[in-house]
Image 1 (spheres, rainbow, N blue to C red):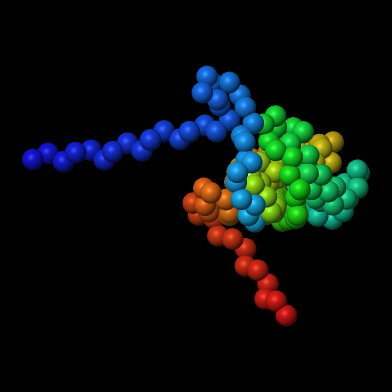
Image 2 (image 1 turned 90 degrees about the vertical axis):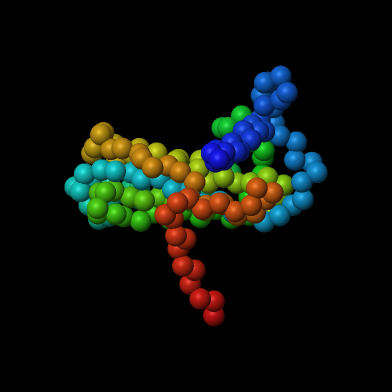
Length: 179
């Protein structure tokens, strides 16, 4: 007797499309408010010489990483103005961590966004990481125009009806002990 192939899972429903295929904003009225967190990352890949200029504080435009952090925070707060079907959210936390990585060479940007609300903050985290990367590029493009922004992706999300998600191979940073 031949084995049946595994059942194909039902196609995921695209929540931003109405029955007739028209774009729509998802109605979250009946959803409970829960704490939701999303973490996204991106990489800015550059020559070692450019990385050294940033790390030594010698960029002509000033504090590259400080400007990138502020830009990422501002971007998270304005995501609904950039992505047409995103809800405006009362974000409770945005943090932008930027670490040099000499193996790239370049920077790894990680954005963490938190809200207590009826919808998630994945788009806010992705927007924050993207804009922080773009800001690094902007701040040092006079030195190197062929930098590359790469690997923008959602690393993890918690909360909400769809549950938790963690990208394959991603391990969250350890939180320092309280005390």
